[in-house]
Picture 1: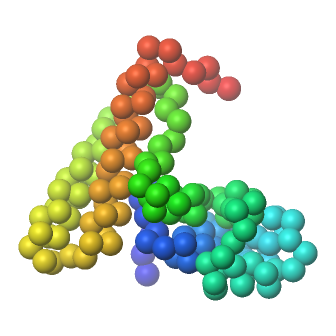
Picture 2: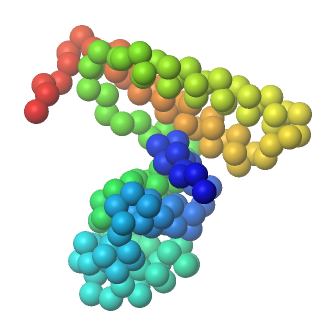
Length: 155
């Protein structure tokens, strides 16, 4: 089984976002639900299982959950679900060839998804996820170009 491309994974609902965070923590950091709950400061790991099963996590627990897991899929889902783009804060650094190549791959992939969608060969969920990822990548590059005149200090 191939590993998922987590950087571009766009969950379609809150439950998939929670499950995706849990899977990322297991796959990349070898964390169990019990360890995630401990890192969140929860006394009982069963409550975390309940939140994942029902998709009802308290808003105050989203950031500790994402930090413990190492990925922000719940935040990505909230942003996409409310019609917003989630863009990492650009640092104004010089873009490398790999950055531009990755952007080009995303734009080509989303164009292919749009063609397949309009031909009835792919679903709306996958097409929307691809569009969301491509728009966020373009927005990051836009912000990086704006910030290039005043780059942040490297710490």
